[in-house]
Image (cartoon, rainbow, N blue to C red):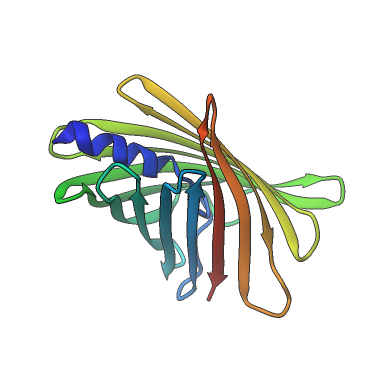
Amino acid sequence: MYERLLPALLLIILAGSSKAGPWLREKGSSFTASSISATYFLDTSSQTYLEYGLTDKTTLIADISMLRLRFAPESGYAIFSLRRALSTPDATSKWAYEAGIGAGWIGVQTLPIARAGLSWGRGIKLGEKSGWATIEASLVWDVTFGEHIAKLDTTVGLNFTDLTAGMLQLYTVDIAGETAATLAPSVVLSPDWTKFRFQFGAESELGNIEKSAIKLGLWREF
């Protein structure tokens, strides 16, 4: 059973989310991001990611993903977690940790999973333009069998204008000594006529161009 579930989990965990890194939400504020990606062969994945500021020092997170492949049952995961700050609010470099529980599934097979993460981030400057950089390391454990997936996400973003930003992300996953990396450039548009932000990007697994995908995302803060 596990041999069938783990590859599916690996594929959807490879997909990056619009996480805020170590920055916490203010109490009562929230952030949502929904995205969908599709390959040339119409393998698709979708993700819904939500953050809510429970207090100024604690952010609640829901991370739900679904994967639909041509020759496999529908699979996915849902993880609910807490993020807490490790650095002071006025620190230049921000640190935070995250801990959560949830489940992963493929078809009718379901396994409980747990996730722990550590993230770092800071604002950056390139000439007159501002931006940000984050690094997040996380482990996802299969509680039943004691196996784990290690993941390292790196993001560099730059605000080109008040309405346009660019991001370059690298997702690296290791499972049982097998490593895969995905490069994901994207552009985020923030039109002044709506509260939504629109993400247009691509994802390509290094050394495996057949798994390249187009990604569309929709973000909003409340």
